[in-house]
Image (cartoon, rainbow, N blue to C red; front, side, top):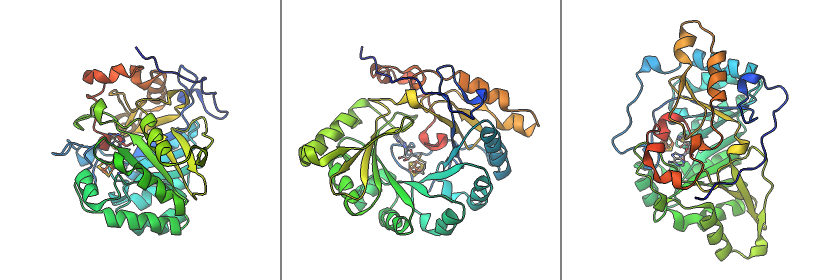
Length: 347
Ligand code: SAM
Ligand code: SF4
């Protein structure tokens, strides 16, 4: 059995209270908030073709509730908040949410499919959103339509250029799937020749209804081998990665931008994990691979304290991928396919 290597234990950051520390010494100062379970795309790797069971509107956090919960996390040491979804920008009150969260002492950021990003440039500037992750899985309009089940390639591509021109630091997220878009790795990297962006290749992960199997996965090693086949070894420069980074980053000599790989399956980065997720219906998940959730919204609505629930959830976090500490564990579907579809978690 291939036991996965882990690095040294994450050091506790000053200013983080015990509430956000787990039993392995990891400090969770990065909160990812899903604003909605809905989306204007239907990506095959993210959700089943026939959609997902949506929470009723009354079970989705209001902007005041999002703010209250975020404030509680910030009080205990959260310094970075990412808004995600579903598609965060389709939520009607997204500007109000940005405004409220921008009043907290945090780095505010967002993951979006970019389809309507052009309508929010002013808001991004006003509320200090300096970095955006924009998903784009193919540079071919037809293929992009097959992957997203919608026709917005041109719009997203143009919006990426627009955001860059407006001074936003853009990271392009691309989920690689064998036989689907793995022939575009070099084309994606070439985007970083003239654009100061980071292209991030994400290993395809299993979630409920996304027909995942290991054979569809394009691993970190496979990406690097394609890169090394195409570029001279001396032109592929390893960039420094911060301890909490999920990416392994590289730059091609002379290129303005970089490329990186997120290898959650073949090379987990759990030792440096500082993330906690809040779903749109107000539940926290202590690990992307865990199907366990802790409800914060119901107690918040009844006026109860949510501090101990947060603390308990973080203290129950497992060391590696909710216990899937080998690659072989991915061959046991009951260990991961019970997990919500990504669209309702907030990636
Ligand atoms: N709608 C926004 C978007 O697409 O960027 C935000 C939500 S989406 C769930 C967040 C990220 O999760 C995206 O970058 C998407 O590519 C990634 N993602 C979704 N399903 C995935 C999967 N099965 N494996 C790896 N990444 C996935
Ligand atoms: Fe929507 Fe993002 Fe999921 Fe695609 S990856 S279906 S854009 S939430």
